Each structure stands twice: as structure tokens, then as C-alpha cells.
Length: 403
Image 1: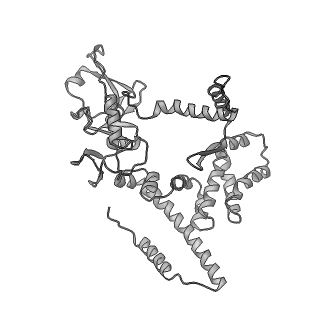
Image 2: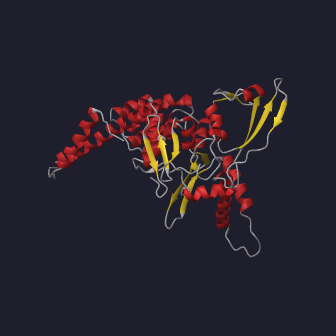
Image 3: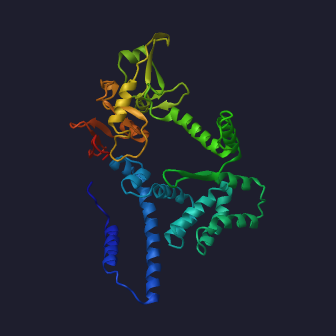
């Protein structure tokens, strides 16, 4: 993709290159520290610009239309940022506009991006009605102290505002601090730490107790080990319901139509669900793409004229063969998302065959992209895949590699 940059960004890139080339060894301490401070301030200013540009790019759907990815995945998969950093930038660009004082302090380089993250985290632990009151105090604190001070200062601030420790505000704050961290350690093991809300804690305790009971008198595992193995059993039970299905269609779609609609052919129109919700034809086709279809034809007085047989989807053998052929990954170039749907490259509604050659494993996002995002997918001459975005630009994924 050809790179076209704004004049201001070109000037910045030129200045950085000049600084890199002319990075002489300084021996004057005052100048050295002054340079470092100036570089840090410039980095903060660039990060503020980065968030604004990312937000604008998302509003214009630029990443989706040109690269076929979400903003977070584009940062991680194409710009090669760590996944955590891509997630942090995505969250900050989304939520920072909700807090104008924090946004202004960041734009003015009075606080850095770590301060911004700490302030937003603290504010989102509070009820909405308290955030406007608390925000200026947190911004002022951030201009004088490191980001790590923000969380502790919030408790002091709540005390100063006379909010009782046992109040609903405190309980809301504790609830919003819930979370679990899972991190890799040595040889593929993981460490786990976090805080559970009371209801989740009770459910997890009950599940671990049920799944982690002693298997018999010869079961010599400690209680801690049994809880560990029980957690694995819980994960297996969940994944068995949500991993790619090799045994048939993951859902059943009942298509109800009038005789007139059937006789005059289906048109591009919005479809009303039994609940009254309206679905576009594209959405309905996406939901039905990997489903078991049962047609029901109604007469002119809404009487049921015919209930068809279920139209079975890809067989177990076809699903497994396609999964093996596609490498167990989404067939969009460099996509890192887990696969979810075995997709008809040529839609069934357009005569596409339920065959291995017409099948492609897609993640949920790229499956949506083919039906509602304006992208098209076709089989390449070499057996791979060609993706075309709404602007006509093409991206190829070959079968012998993931690019």
C-alpha cells in the first residue's frame, strides 16, 4: 500500500532522523538532562497526536476499509506493537474524549500517557455523578506525582470528600476493580492473580469444589492441585461449546417466507425477527452462512404450506480437512484471531457448492467483513485466497504461509 503522509508528519520524521544522525556525545550535564527532558516532552506530545489520529482513522473506517482489520489488530499484527500496548492505545483513544480536563492536560504535555491511563482507570471505578468532581483533583495530582500515586490518592480523596468507606461508592469502586491477570512464566506455565466480585467468587468456588473433589482414596493431589485441575476442566467444558465445530452446523436458522415472496424471488429487504428486531438481508445471510436451514413457506393467509427438510452444512470430514488445509487460522493475511465460521466463498444463495474448494475458515470479524463490510473473498489460482477491499485493493493469502 502506497504511503502518503501529511507535511507536518514528514517534518517530524525528518527532525527525528536529523537528531538520530547528529546524536553527538554530550559531556555537559545540564545540557544532557535538558535534552532528555525535551525529548520526553516531545514523546508525550507525539503520543497525544497518535491517539487523535487513531481516533480519526477509526471514525473514518480507514483501518477496516484499507487493511481489513480492527484498529487494535492492525496495531498488533501490522505495526507489531505488543498486544497489551495495542489494547491500551485503543482503550485510551476511545475513552479519553469523555474526560476533557485529562485530554487538555495531555495535549498540553503536563501529564504523560501513563498518567492518562491511571486517571481513566481511577475515574471508571467511580459512579458517573462523581467523575466531574474528582477529575480535576486527579489531573492536578498527576502533574506533580508519578502515575502509580493516582490509585492510592483516589482513596485519600474519597476520604477528604467525606465518602464513607462502606458506602455504595466504595462498593462500586471495589466492583470496578475486579479483574484477573494471566501471564506466561517459564516453560509455558502461567501465573494467575486478580480480584473477583462476590458473586463471581461464589460461583467459581462452587464450580471448583464440584469439579475438584477427590477422585478416590488413591487421589493424592493437594486441594490446591485439585483446584488447578478443576479450572482446566471448566475451561475444557467452555471451549467444547465455543471452538470451531467439526460435527455440523453450530446453529439452526428457520427461514419463514410468504408464498408471494417465494414466487417472486427474495429481494434485498430488511427482515423482521420474531422478537420484532429488524435485520438487514446481509446480516441475515451472515447468521445463516454456517447454519442448518429449515425453510417454512406460508400461504397468502399466513397458513403453513410447507416445512422443508434441514439443509445440512459442511460435513465433519470437510470441516476438519479445511481446518487442516488453512492451518487452523483465519484465511485473512496475517490475521491472529481464532477461527469461528467455515464460510462459503461463493454464497449458497449464488449457487456456491458445499465443497472443500468453496470453504474457508474465518474469524468472526472477517466473516462479518465479507457479508457486511464491503470486502470480497475469492479462491486464487494457486489455491490460496484473494481479498478485495471496497477500494478495489487486493491482498493475497497463500496456503503455504500465513501472509
